[in-house]
Length: 153
Image (tube, rainbow, N blue to C red; front, side, top):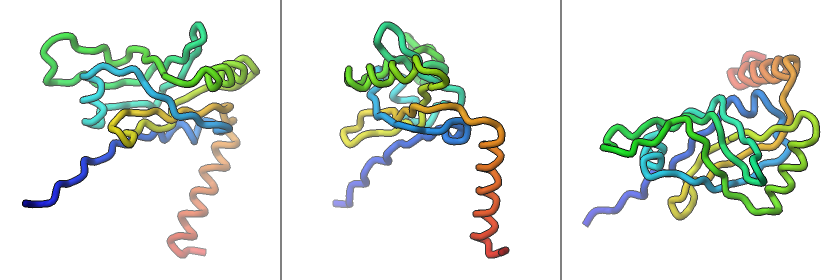
């Protein structure tokens, strides 16, 4: 008998998140997903670039994240841009809600990953948006680091 290969763990990151926002706190949340959405996530058919989270009656919802339709689905196809409920503890939800009500704070998705038991989790960040000069500084530091790695200095 041959060795069984461990299934590949899925990890999809939102690269725009750390570029556009200062991450002050991060939380790990569960998500309410449909079966066809899970299959699409396993197929890496997710775009989180413009995603954000919004509080609605004490619950947190993920909005503007595109999970493509599963192409082998016969009927009952999910809507790709539907809002999805995030599952957090009440203490975390109240903490997020108080921060959002203060000026300039927002909640955004950072990374979608598969947990130990095969359940998909979403790492969300709580922070403030960066100004354009902050973004320029980040790009400058990135260029300097790349040149140092190449041995130019």
